[in-house]
Image 1 (tube, protein in one colour):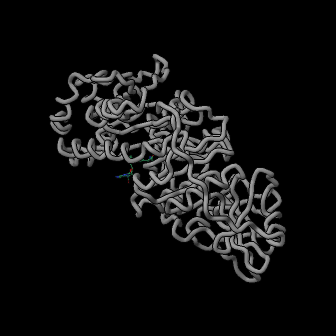
Image 2 (tube, rainbow, N blue to C red):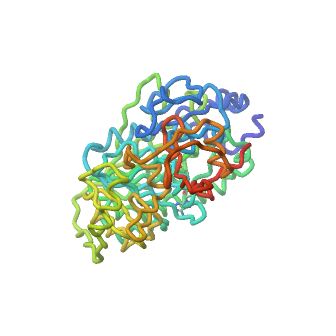
Image 3 (cartoon, rainbow, N blue to C red):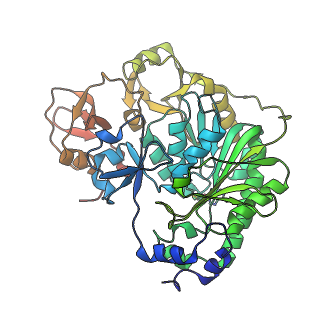
Length: 457
Ligand code: SAM
């Protein structure tokens, strides 16, 4: 097995803080599956879950739990309802870093730069306040769909999904209070889970990734406010992609490294970069229950000098008649404002209106705020986003499905329901919304997004 792990990698790690060759090789030989999920605090508490076999809590994450086995998540309707996200435990440590470096009760703007498929974004969203804004960006177009899907299922109003290159964010100088760069990397941290990654690993690729990581950081730094926090992470063990990147960043004299408190029993290894003694946190699968991961945090020095850009465009606010159409669908929330975009009614927190306009004139927005649905002749055709959202009014007519019915709904297969209702009906499973149907005189129209339907029998 040792031969299967790249010799060059093992050699390069010999002197790295916390690396123990024998234990590292042994844990990769065992190939133990460590499965974990993180619950969506707006939708489900761990005790309401009926499908997952939970074991211990992930010690550094409030809503993170290990599973005693890895089920087929596709067969759990609550997975599709966004009640939890299947996430590797080490990466949930982002929660500690954010809690220790940011005022999460304040209204802040956070950029998750390399966001697809959305693991870190859904975690960030659960941590920030309602009036905060998360910009969840993915540069690769084909990966934005899965990001939008996961963000939609998470059900939050304060997220904007963008599809931009890191350098595009230079159009927004001093905009963000925090930027998370979960960088594309050589992926050695995932060797235990994904043996394919072992075959794809090469020293040259580590070098290539290291250069790309520097480019990404250089491109994004101007959009971080002074005193703002930059969080950098990879799933690589290579120093070139971890501590060396910290050194490169600290060499620009724009940042100071932030130490994060960890508990001894967590077995997370604090490392120090060679030249500037920057703090980094290493996760080894032979020391804790999680995959390989590295994370470091920095504060930007200095005072903000450049002026914030002012929005030039205006939004088309919702008309009184349109507002009457939507009020019956949503919970009263005085912090929200509504505007129209291509006949769709969109809700956003009022503190984020100007920021949304600034984003709109600078970036390519794929999704912004909460799309409530399309208004046609004073009638709302409710969107799937609304079904997934905690904005939805409790009085919207709804029915509870049994598990097999719920799975058939998600498969777009036919199912029978007995209901007195006509028109739009929200379907639920275990009291959590799955999506809409429309009761017609002699059939049921299924409004679960066709592109997300499940195929599993
Ligand atoms: N943060 C994600 C999560 O927790 O679900 C995982 C992100 S993955 C480690 C890195 C992401 O960076 C990928 O989605 C990849 O498409 C994106 N990426 C690749 N090249 C990039 C580049 N040059 N600039 C920014 N992002 C890039």
